Length: 189
Image 1 (tube, rainbow, N blue to C red):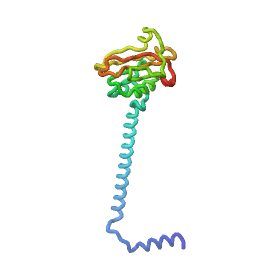
Image 2 (tube, rainbow, N blue to C red):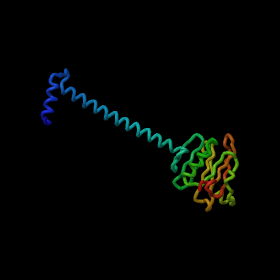
Image 3 (cartoon, rainbow, N blue to C red):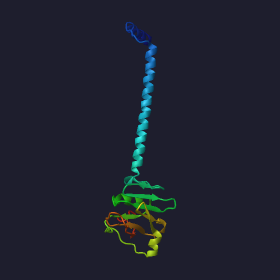
Image 4 (tube, one colour):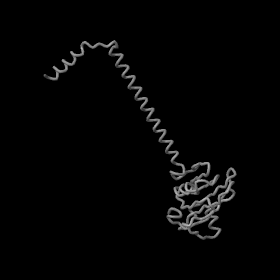
């Protein structure tokens, strides 16, 4: 039996099968279903892309912070904004998530130790400098009733990082700042 003989035999076995629907209607319905599936697929792909975008934006929070830019990351507890001139603005609204604030500052290239206990961690050693150097590194202002620390990383002496260790207080009226020697355990560098 050749291929042609097989095709003829199969075709003849279906001669008694009839459809009430004409071939044109079947074809147009098939095209419509395929088009609908493509649209659903595109909508699904767009939904996945939107979810990925939301996840990426959410990941820019303290746990997965990318270096910030003007506007920074805005949280209920604190905001970090790296400015175009290299300064870093830190606004403290609540003393929550010191580890997140520390990670965010480090992601912006600032060697930092942050606690909200008023105490310097045992892993850190103070970096002693005069008050004039501290004034070059730190300045402050108020924004919306909250203290804003303006940190000038370029003014840090070699081997120094910042220490932010305010006592747990509400409302936040002052912020304890200072310098520490950089080390992997203290400032992450």
